[in-house]
Image (cartoon, rainbow, N blue to C red; front, top):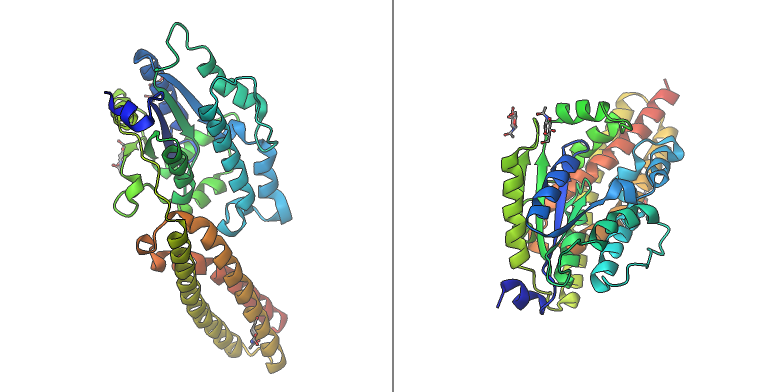
Length: 355
Ligand SMILES: *[C@@H]1O[C@H](CO)[C@@H](O)[C@H](O)[C@H]1NC(C)=O
Ligand SMILES: *[C@@H]1O[C@H](CO)[C@@H](O)[C@H](O)[C@H]1NC(C)=O
Ligand SMILES: *[C@@H]1O[C@H](CO)[C@@H](O)[C@H](O)[C@H]1NC(C)=O
């Protein structure tokens, strides 16, 4: 009995493979290489290109809204982006559940239906192959810069007992920027710079679910050897599908709340320190005492909003981690940097007004 059969209840062996990395890191080139290698193996394989599937205006409105560049990528505000990503996975799920129903288009306006149609076309004509038992491979092509984004894919793989693996394309920033510049529709270089700051590459030591990951150095190019490594990883994943998780939802929920409380508490302390530093600076800059009170109130209010959003966002983002796996220090630091920015802005305004 094949391993895939044991795990997948006699279903077609299938694998979700996450390709992650900066824009222009070489994901599409790699994907093309894997597609031809997969064809040689007589697998049915398809690239799921997030850039094509998610309507461009979803991206642009986030960038332009309020004149705040890159807003869509600021963690507290990327819930809309998240809906788009989830809609892509829903399309994949729909296909997994009912592969025979080809005519069904994604009902969701969050997805470009024509792009999905093109994407799935490759699976519709498995010329001369027996579709039933032919391994099925989805290559998910997006940046996937936070672990939480990749975890959504892992959860889907686990739900349907599929194979799961990840390829991180590590590429020198300069190379990404220069390759991006050569494209017909380059994305703003600032977007790439912002993403570098946020990128958390697969870390199997920290997240056990990221065990099946490889890192490729794509600074120069994608080599035959790279493709070979990825094919081996996928083969392994196909024959070793995940098992559905046992239901420990309640315990997880409790852990999550506890963890969020601790993150917010630590962030609160860090913010208090930042506020008292700001007050000291204002005093030294001779801001009048009446204004000092307004400054204190404004900083206080900004902190309250920040902590509220932090809690909300943490609960969303952290749905995938066990408490002992959370690097509270790191989460707090990353978050408090955002508060620090708005603190600086408020402080500067007060100092300018009273010069
Ligand atoms: C990746 O490859 C480039 C060029 O071959 C090399 O300069 C760079 O140091 C490599 N990066 C890593 C992290 O190994
Ligand atoms: C990179 O690889 C692609 C595909 O393997 C090839 O077409 C291209 O010429 C290569 N580019 C360089 C600079 O080696
Ligand atoms: C700070 O804000 C909290 C709630 O937002 C409020 O209870 C508290 O009185 C405020 N403190 C100052 C010094 O403004």
